[in-house]
Length: 220
Ligand code: NI
Image (cartoon, rainbow, N blue to C red):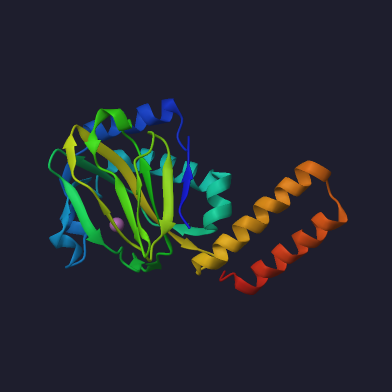
């Protein structure tokens, strides 16, 4: 399941993040790619050791983790340190799968938070490759797409302007994407039921089922 979530960052927060990145030192992104992904990765990343980025890295992580839709769809247990990437004209990231382990953490969900206004650059779509074809995403600044880390994906070439993004990985309490989707649907339906009819007997039964499915599937 892919999920798009808008307005994860406010306009003011976006301004702060972009201002910090304008001062940051960007290095070749291939340094953090595996031996095969390195062959197709052509972008720049803010230097991981850049201490001045600590504040915005923390801000973005907090906003992502505090987002209710993200919490329901992804069930995050832990987040890897965020990467800030920049693609300029001619840069792309070919088809690859993300590493299963990052800093000793299993990666279940990947996400890209778009930081540049889509009108400010051409190309740079994130494409997620499925058995029935590709789904492409080029979102408003401040919006993110979260998708299963198990999938092949790529970023198409930027042909004008620059594409800034924050990318991250999540260890989920629920490892299986199909189970996460089922829990998300059930939880969403339960909340809508509550909004419509309050704490009814049916709401209580669905809540009980959801809680007990979680108990069956959660790895805490
Ligand atoms: Ni990737």
